[in-house]
Image (cartoon, rainbow, N blue to C red; front, side, top):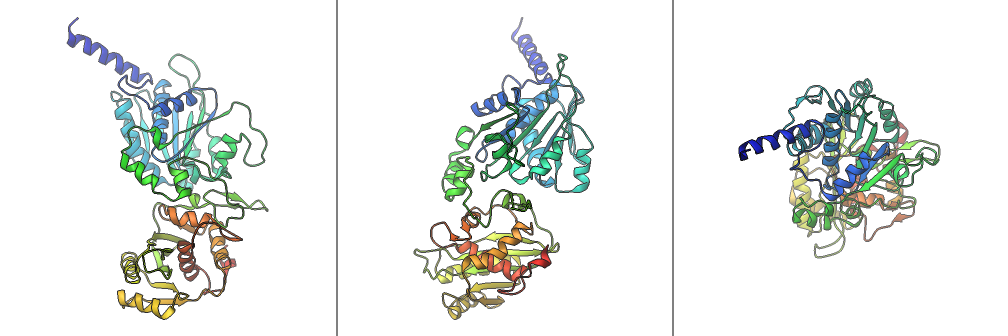
Length: 458
């Protein structure tokens, strides 16, 4: 047999391997992705991959779903995420085609971009759906699936997951005649230990009542950036520079202990009366609706920029839906002229209607500094006549009612929020970013400085 004939024979053998659901022989999983695969191929009905960012969790699950789909002709699988734009852009149009090109390069498939599903040559389908629209959710719930994968589970409420699981019901068979086991798959960058994934997978209890879960029905694997050999060293350096809590979450992949009495939480919580209080992650948004007003909150530190606390600078918009949207955190440690220029530049960028600045470090001086940077800035000076907790609690109540959303990630700000309790700020230094946020949201969404009409927001 000639080399050409041998190559053609091996190529055809590899193609058939892929069509049967096995990745090409040229594809190699990372060690942690191999653990992830062992979990999915194991007896547990539900599997969780948790850990730091860019550790290969999403790619690994997509590859395993592709293999399951190709091994069971006519099967149907769902990849879901809270926001449709995220699952469409990040998974359907990015991770999925990259995965197919690397793991199953000889398998032809079509993507229906309008209905958002991939069709494989054996008739199997992989659907991509967001959970942020009733019509879209109804469409998802109208089908049964052999696999349901909830991507970025930190953003998805437990009640939604329970509803999705009612559609994990498709009876389908592998090419060898054996039944394809139903699988629920989940991943996230871990939040607090109160999150339903920690309760269900790590503690092995039902989140709604604390009762033990059926033995062997849940499994998990921890995957972190250090386990991914494909990441550049610069990315690891960025993670090393994050604030402590964010570093533990996005680099070390740790579930964090909740600060007792915290006014904010990254994950959902349940009040004593059973009311669900959404966490920052659940409320996070990819984009904001048209805005009615935009306010920048400023908390001057009194520092000359050579040390001390930051100057808190946070921009917040009021959407046409009546909700608040955190747009930017530009807090800095600069000279008065430096931070005033940051405020002026941010005001132009976001189209601010007003600057709200605390006067406690010299009101006239603060206003003069801001006007020297841009005399056109509308400025309102406010006085902190009450304590930080008293000012923060009404704003925290807006979050608890689901009326404030972070447009993107603000790690330093979010760390200060989750470190603030009914007894005060539990972190080091001053919560400058939190103070700026409180001033801005109070001006936008509460009835004047010090008068809070929360009933109107229910």
